[in-house]
Image 1: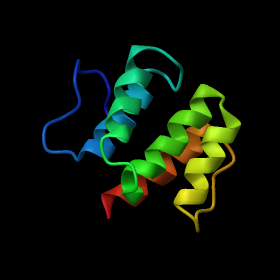
Image 2: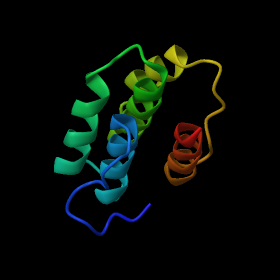
Image 3: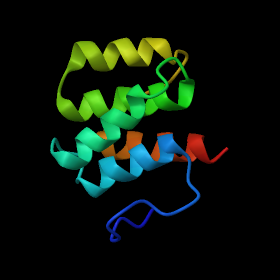
Length: 95
């Protein structure tokens, strides 16, 4: 997913937009992370949003909150790294 533009590409879902912002922000806390997190909070309880929400809290370094969101989307096999998890979630959201 190309993140060179100033905003996410048209036509992608809100959870995909949140993923875009996480990648745009180089998987770090900052304004892009905040945008992603705000999107995730729009429809808590919806699996796609909750998957990205879990990843956002992993990036944040909040293990307890991350684990809470992963329990909400169980069963889910988390990847070994944030970057690999981003890719796994992105592939899931394409379906």
